[in-house]
Image (cartoon, rainbow, N blue to C red; front, side, top):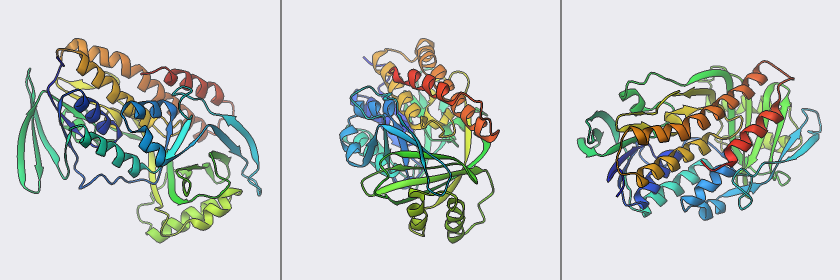
Length: 380
């Protein structure tokens, strides 16, 4: 017997879809709600580390994700000089174990579609254009009110999982006031053809940006990014966004010369600010629990955001399927397994960003990266 027989998951991103997959596989009736009209996701690309790949395999999607991604096992560092000189090539930690690549790059919407399709295949019911309006709970369940084009609906569940991202509706409905805070950096991203010599992530530190980097996502495409001081770029037209990213990229060479020429109206150029937050305590209020970006977020400086959300779902589903009651003991076990690990990743990501903002050359970046790799290499 499981701790729950019916669960509503709010948010179809990586964490929400993963929770839906695992619980539906375990025989739980799962409804997956998303306010969006379909599975399309904003963003050009994503870097996924080995510990996240290990979880994707557990979800039954790794074979398909492999076909829509690009794997590599090393990281390059280049100079901001006219040749884009390679300074070092560093073996990347295989945090998922020897059977998985150290890192993969992927087009984020591709992975999102694969995860949602898997959730539907194992029995989860997906409701698009479904906005959660109200939650009311008692000792035995949660009444969830939601709206769509057909009106307002009410359903009852044993548990509600809020996996609805940075600006979580569920978090707000619970009265949790923790919000993502900007850290002072902004990032330009673009999705462009892959230069033939780009076979891994290379990072350039220095020049007009804190970081200039790229990550291959398939045999044909990469996503490229530039990290600068956060600015209000909201008034720029799409053409001005492309021109701004091209201008910033003029300082970088090597593969960047080809990348820069590919920056046009088809490159899906977009700009966002780095933020972070952490609910530093239990992520549940009664029978409603937050996971993924609804509970914690961090700058992508160590590329562990998606991994932490997937792990949240994995641990929560394991406890719910193995338990026989939704009680304080279950929530304490969940908190003990997830909060310290997520907190360590958030703090490490922020530390790296702070060192860059302060132009601190004495920060022990290798030591910090090694400690994070050791932490996440142990299964959640």
